[in-house]
Length: 460
Image 1 (spheres, rainbow, N blue to C red):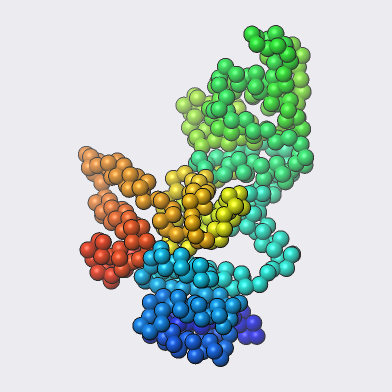
Image 2: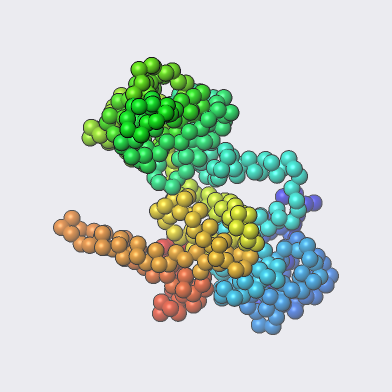
């Protein structure tokens, strides 16, 4: 950030150590920083100068942060206000957002998260030029609905660009909910076949008795109820792309027939005698370990090698460092539009709670959580209690502990105790709506003790 274009920030906090910390930290980030030791002091400064951003504590001795927020909006409506506090409640968060605060974040905060919020706040001050908006959108939604900027996802994007122009068969693996079908669609849209059909076949969703006729079609009279000829999905997808979802569920008999289609690019309809040629690209997906299925004789080795010409492994949510805020905001915007709700952002407190969650259902589970939040939210911001994760975490924690019962093989006591401690801290923070002081009281420990435990467990 050049000297001419420095953004100006007013820091309002009656705690000297916090003012000094923010002055040093924000100065190093390239901001021009002005300090106010109280709400009254802030009013005097605001009467004389306008700021790009005001960072204010919520609880101060003379005038609280909400009054600073109101005064700022009165004197300088274009200024952005971020409120910080160690004493969070849903009521004050909602009130702050209604009064025009950009966000409401906890003390002590994670430096990286604070930097991200400030950066987004500054970027929101001005509408981006059309070209810049397009480029930003392409970085976030790199291929269709694929969202993320983590190192793992950038590698996926690079691989999509490389393989899309080929006709090689592709196998996409990964846990349920990681977005395997989105990758398949992205490859199809980037390929020369983009204007041709993209046909999805759920190999686990079609009854075994019907799958052959669904795939290959049938001739009139081939079986009872076959009153007319019917095209199969392979014919429908001619010159396009076939996506075989959950391909590991195919029966041995259908595996043989599929292998012939891949090798010969031809098939025969059920009840027919005439061979039909077809030109399709095969993209398959599975959450199974197909190599192990081959070893166990449940999946044909020759078919596996035909499908697995190019392999794309989708990372689970827990391995997509930094993508959670992008994904959550993307889903928030999507469901706010679809449900006609004015829910504009996810609070820093709620993002903390999401960051502590393991997402066993991956991106699909996050999408469902955000949809529920938007549907039920009555304010313009998603708060921690809207996420409703505590009950699931409670039951999951109990199940995990049952699985870790002491056996003859033994266990690692320190790890078990750390996980139990983490669970109770997360539950206490959830009940306390993000307030660390209240969470400490619920746990019967001091605020400093809670801060020590959070640092020890590497929790925000």
